[in-house]
Image 1 (cartoon, one colour):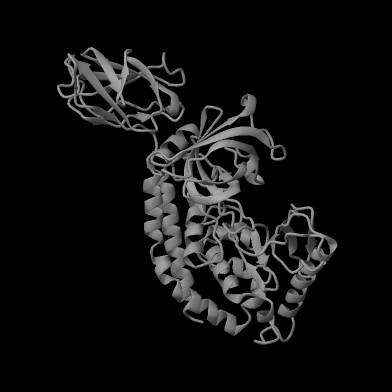
Image 2 (tube, one colour):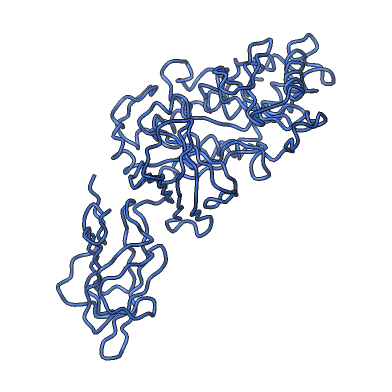
Length: 498
């Protein structure tokens, strides 16, 4: 796709700007080899211009040529003898023409990248490709706020590798980032560990955004924060990505006490982050008597005493859940489970009918020090909101997560169903804003999605496991709006009968 980078104005004749003395500003491919074409800015009678630059441009060391009538230029108050200059265009620049000893009115330049979202640029050492999920590569990364963020503009060393399961096999790859030290990125709190979601099969580019909106709105203990970004790797625009916090124990992430000394036998009761993942993707895992394959995520390595404590706690809770006295308020599952957390996690995943969250993977829960078991944080929603063609999770009606481990039993308790109904009704103001949330993200993604699908022309192509191919971004967004409307109406009809 060829974008027009010139300002939206009619071309002037060869007369200079009567206010500034400047006729044109040129960013040529000769001076900036990364450009796909020359950019010519007609100044006319303007006192300020905002050039829109392609994502491949080195905006912090960009070279301009100024066509003017006068003796010399001043750039930010400094004399410039040449009409060609290099500057950092992430910062405001003022040009003045000096003629017969007098300075013209200044021309202000405020450049930004061709997108309405921020930009991440990653340069891998030796231009190496990111070829696998196992080996971190040394790289540098720079964050550009693009007029949206003035702080958190990371610029430093990182390690990068591939990540994901089925998503790693797709043409547009997801990545794992590890910073050299904990730092914020844009307005996200500081940490070392981050994820870049590609959302290749999610043609709305926003299913995870919808889920995190619900999780945060429902007041879950921790919701991974995310920002849409343009990603450039080794000078090549990769498309629209989603920068999201990786799930970790940390004051800026899941804020529970971390076991600081694994050799201390007294530090065994938490905190743990665990995941039901039938692929047994972590070295430390076990299967409960009811078939839940539990993986230790944090810490990823545990001592025998820690392993035994967590395993015994989870299996004891499960045993009580399936006992005859499971619904007893004192002796039943409430002794082991933070029920409100279970309900809110259930609602997020049931509303979105998240394919994997029934019994397969990304079913996270945590055990804080001397506390009960809590569900969350939420994760992995590319196969949600009707984006699957191999199960009934495709359809907006019918229960899904309710039939999974533990929840099928919990719903046999009338008190649990009553509490689900209570939480559902409390969350109605959050649910009522879903159409607005979707429309706002679609508007924000307007330029970005167009560039993304120019790089990855799949809008009219089947991508596993899409149940529909709408042929346009607008059609994909409309599909999830209508799907969620039907889903919420169906769930409300069911829940209000309890």
